[in-house]
Image (cartoon, rainbow, N blue to C red; front, side, top):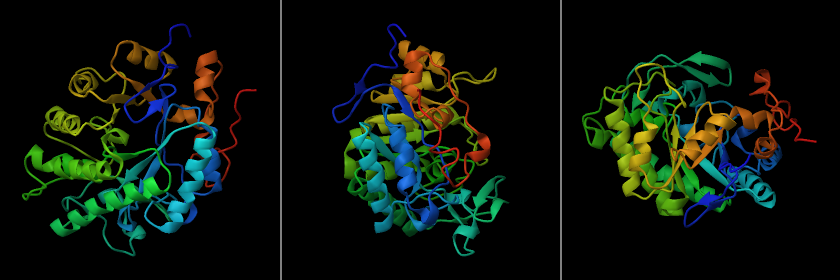
Length: 355
């Protein structure tokens, strides 16, 4: 494509990305025993032509687990598994960031020996958990104590250090999709009246302290934070969504975070205001947009200055060489939804590149 921005480099003082076609984090359910393996390494290396790869959500502790066959990054075995992945991606010329994940109330007692999952507050909600025994209804979580909150922040720092030890190029704090940092941020799930609840400043504290933990290990420019103000995962809700999320954006700007990974569809239903343009005004780092973009809409967002890069999820599943397909305007393969979580190479590493 003539004068395309998708294929131009972008970066900051620490990282340079060879193109702006980034790979989004996607749960794929291939990590038996919660350890990234040789198959994981093959999968990510196949997609190393992306300007940047964000890994699937990677749990920071045993308490953070909330989805079956997902990888962690808190044991020596898990770090060793991820070392294989980062080595394979780097040898293929790619860059890869680990997404640090705590599911909070979106977990289930099946993952915790019958114990309740944790959350800012014991608020019942309507969602589902993907357990080893299949999909089950969510349960009312238990409220974290202050001491447990502090320990969880420490878990983010340990996980960031583990990611550094495993050879990752940076980390992303998963503050999206109704997981623990978002549960603290939004006033629907957070009914606390202490220093982690009430005002937006207090509700944002957990997200910002988790980000500080990552910055302590990697420095600000190798840290990404993912937010999803309008993606209705896990029965979330906030009484003043724009104020809440723009407060978070302003606070991340003050910390000089390298990447803001902002989930918002390119077009919203009538009457809903896009928040990405406001985030763009407030955030001077790399703004990466995600959700439902194709090559044309991605190019438009880059050309207008709304975004610095775009992450693609589903398209990268079936098109491991997606940047080259975009470059050649080649046909795109369709992903087989039945094999998203098959547990094997089927629908994972068996999609061929262009001939």
